[in-house]
Image (cartoon, rainbow, N blue to C red; front, top):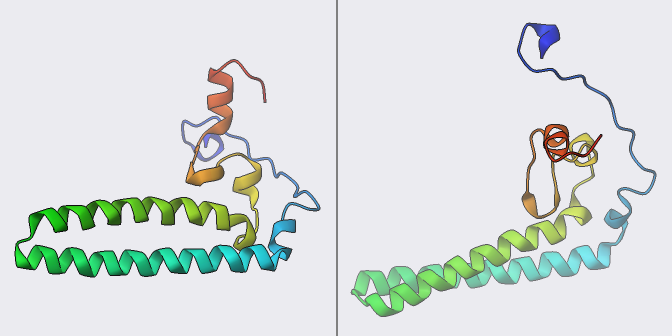
Length: 122
């Protein structure tokens, strides 16, 4: 920040929370269903990992490759599943309100600069 001797022209402005921004955290039924699904996916991932290791140690390249691909698919499902679960287990913060943390795990470290570069005003 310039005020501390740096190069960044940044001015901190607190963004007040919306009264209902964490309302989804009260929906425990949806949260529990999403957690249960996540646990199922993690068990499937563990099973696929054991099968991959076993096939690899036996030299069964075809089965090992199939299990490795299954693990990659499950990894993506687990990753996406977290972001479905996120609003039910993590309170929104300044970074959500400022547009730094976005849905799906996307991060924009300088959202205001990207808006200005695209011709939008903040």
